[in-house]
Structure formats: C-alpha cells, structure tokens
Image (cartoon, rainbow, N blue to C red; front, side, top):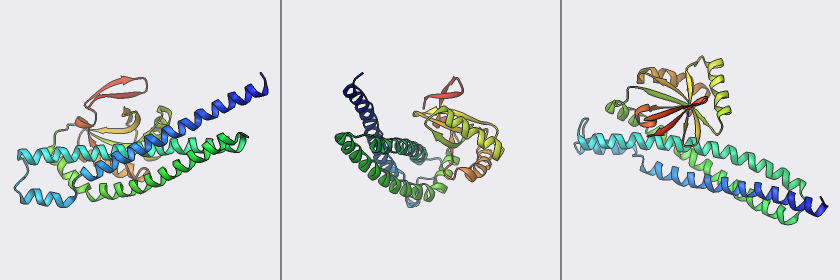
Length: 247
C-alpha cells in the first residue's frame, strides 16, 4: 500500500473518532436539556404546602396523582443525572484519544477539526457540571417530600437501592464486586435500563432499603431508592443481568 493510501486510511480512521466525539457531545447536550426540564417539573417543596392548604390531603384522588407525578419525576431526574455522568466519562475518553491523534497526525485539516470538536466538548462538559450541581441541589431539597410521597403511595412490595450506573456490563460487575468486598453488600444485581447497566439491591420493604442506602452512600453519595413497581415493572433474564422490558 502506498504512503498516500496509508495516509488516506489513517485520516478516515481518525475522522471516525472525530465523528464519535461529536455524536457523544450532541447526546450529552440532549440529556442536559432533558435534565433541566425534569428539574423544572419536579415540584419544589413549597408546592407541597400549597397542595395541603388547597385541601389535597393524603388519599385524595388529585393528591395521589400529584404524588405519583413527583415520584416519577424524581426517578427520571436521578436516572437522567446518572446517564449524563456515564456520557461525560465516555466523552472524556474520546477527548483524550482525540488529543493523542492530534499530536500524532500531520494533517492540518484534521488537526483543525479535532481542535474544534475538543473546544465544543469542553464547553458542554462545563455546562453539564453546572447542571449537575443545580440538579443535586434540587434532589436534596426535595428528598423529604419525595420520600413522604413514596411512603404515602405505598404501591410497591419491593424497593431497590440504585448503587450506580455504567456503560458496560463489565464495569457494572466490577462495581458490584467492590460493594461486596468492601461494604458487605452481597446481594446486588445488575439491571439494563435505558442503555445503562444499573447496579441495584432489591429489598422487601423501604425500611430495609433505607438501611442499605446508608452503607451505599459511603461509596456512592448519589445512590438512591426507587419503587421497583414503577422503576422496572417487567424484566427479562439475560446472561449476567436483567433487562427492563417495560415501565
């Protein structure tokens, strides 16, 4: 193969990584927009007082619908936050590779394209960090409200403690192994949900889940509790994990 053909092949290969970087950045940007929307729709704590003063007490039809809405919004917000974290890690990996390619290639056009992609990726990562900080504040401020709403609904016979999410099954398996070895959490399983491998401990009641959560937060401060009846209504056994097939 001639030098020209080798150069063309290399440029094509590296261009593929540039495209991958752009795709990941676009996906991360979309999730940032989604998470902002969810944060806005997740009712602030003051709304609870308004609902109570308006007469929507425990057990009322409208009150129950509101509680279902806030618990679902809370789960969606936390799931989207976890997905953004995963996408951010993938974007970092691609950016590191692009930096290596930029240093190795002699193609000026490719260098320019890589520089532009890296600049956009950096901007998106900064924006996602700001969104994550805002979302963390929203989740924390509404934690008691969401917990009370979940308890009031009491629709789930099983509760899950989501330990974390990973982009690959191997990474999730490693996470489960760490929790077992260092934190004595030996009953964690892996669920594939929204293209993310979630490490989760399924318990028979919320009280038990709250105990597991305390330990889980020692390693993963962003661990959270979900009612399995809404988080993953149906699942199918796969090799090494369960896949959510309906919610």
